[in-house]
Length: 436
Image (tube, rainbow, N blue to C red; front, side, top):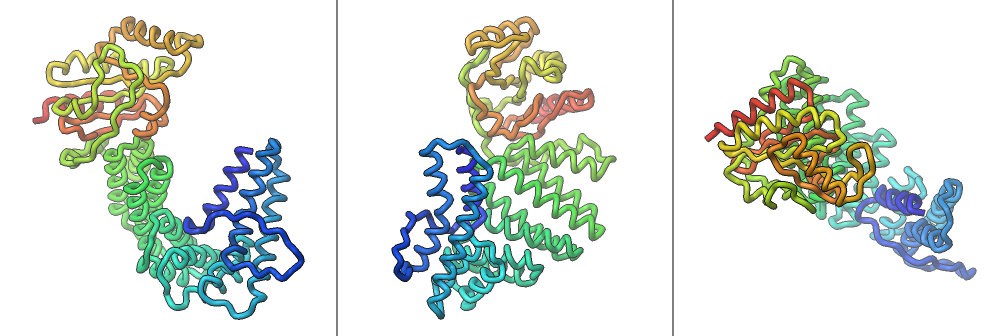
C-alpha cells in the first residue's frame, strides 16, 4: 500500500499547506449531525488516511479500483458534510472557511469560490485566510477569472503567514493563465514573482533539492519566454545567465546543465569561455562537505581544510566509459599543477560491480585500489555508501566535475567528456592555479 499512501499525501498537498490534520470517523446514530464545522471537515479530509491505514493493517495489495472507489467515497462524504453544514442557515467566520474546504474536497468550484469569497470579504489575516486565498486562486484560474486570482495573490502578500511553496504555486497558475491569454507583460510580472518565491523556497527548504531545482528552472524558463515574447532577448539571456550562476552557488550540476543548455540554445554564438564566472570569486557560500565512508590514497579532508588550494571534485565510476576517457587528462593536470596547489578528488560510491562482475563492498574497494594503480592515477578517491554527495551537488549524470577556487568557491561545473569540454576545463584549471 505504499503507493496508495503516497497518493493520499499528494492529495492532501493539493489542499493548502495550512489544512488541518486528521480526525477519527464519527458513526451515524440517526440523530441530527451537530458536529462543529471543523469536525465535519476533518472527518472528510481524513477519510483517505483512515481507509488506507485499514488497508495496510489488512495487508491488501495495491488495487487501482479500490483506490478510485475510496476517493469517490471521500468526495461523497465531503458533499454530505457540506450539505449538513450549509443546512444550518447563515454561516459566518470559520464556518465559512470549513464549508469552502469541504466544497474544495468535493471538487465543487462554484460553491468553494462562493464560500471563500464570503470568508475573505473583510480581508482577514491568519492561516485559514491564507489557505482560503490559495483555494480562490485555484478556482479563479480554472474559471478564467484571472484578475480575481491576481488580486487574491496581492492580498496574500499583505498578510501572514506566508509560505514560499504556496506563493510559487499561485504565481505559476497566474503566469500560465496570462501566457495562454497572450498577455505577455502580465506574464513577465508574475513570472518574476514565481522566481522570487522559488529563491525564497531554496533558502528555507535546503533539504528539498529536486523540488528547489524544479521551481527555479520552471520560473526562469517562463520568465525568459515572456521576455522573448516581448522582443527582449537580452533580458531572456540575462535570466538564464543568472540561473546558471545560482546553480553554481547552490551548487547543483543538474540545474547548471539545464540552464547552460537553454542558454546555448538561445544564443548559439555564445562563447563558452564566458561561462566561467569570475563574478563568483567574491561569493561566501559554503559548499556541502563530502560524505566519505572510505578514502583511497587520500587523507580524510574537509573542503574547508582545502581553502588556499584549487580543488577539482570529479564525480565518476569505473564502469562509466566517458569517465574513463577523462582519466588521462585528470592525471596530467594533477601532475602538472600539484606543486601549484591543485587537489583532485575522485568521488564515487559503492555500485556493487566492477570489472564486469558483481562485487561486495570490500571487494569493490580492492578493485578501486587496483584500478587506481593500473591507470596510474596520482590523486585520491572518496567512496560513499549512499547517494548523499550526488544529492548535495545535484549530480544526476557522470562525469561531472566542480572546479573550486582557493577561497572555496565553485567557479565552474564541467559536464560530460567531449573534447571541447575537456579542453576548456584544462584551460580553466590553469587559470585558477595561476590566479592570485
